[in-house]
Image (tube, rainbow, N blue to C red; front, side, top):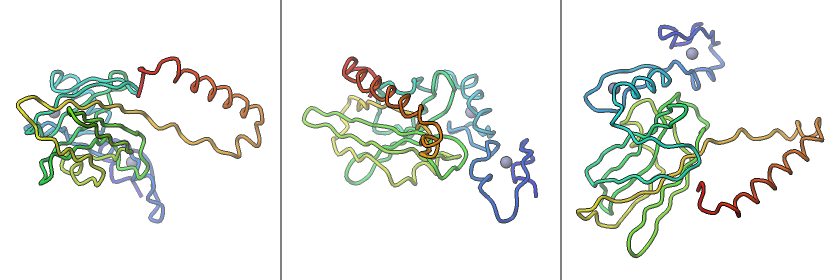
Length: 209
Ligand SMILES: [Zn+2]
Ligand SMILES: [Zn+2]
């Protein structure tokens, strides 16, 4: 049978028993995260829509580099857009009894595997709180608030917005051990890469996160 997103351009045929394609179908509709805009499209088309229609409404960032977001207590969401691939992410903020709870979600197909990891660091005068987690994909903003991974920030928001240091990193697909068995020279290549990245951590302690 056809994919449920056939009307949006997907040409994939799926069987009744194997529904894996539906989880990662890139044609699934995602809603524009800005309230008042009713645009919905695939995550790729939505990225272009956001860049062209709401150019001032997002914070731009690059993968692997820490950036700072100023959050007011009444900001419900802040949209983040990656400079190069245009991927959209949502920083959620909701008030709770104990303080404010924040987390990040990615706008995209409802895959069970997360494609991104992230850090959020909140700093007050007396302490630092950090959440390191993997990102869930959502197609609508309300779904993002249901995530159970949250950083609860008990510091009172004063007149100053809260500064959050955020870093988003794509997850590299795991290396299959069978590949290493068949291609022994790869072991040396990966060992070499590991040494390079290990030494770069010590040479550039402030770069990345
Ligand atoms: Zn599909
Ligand atoms: Zn829009």
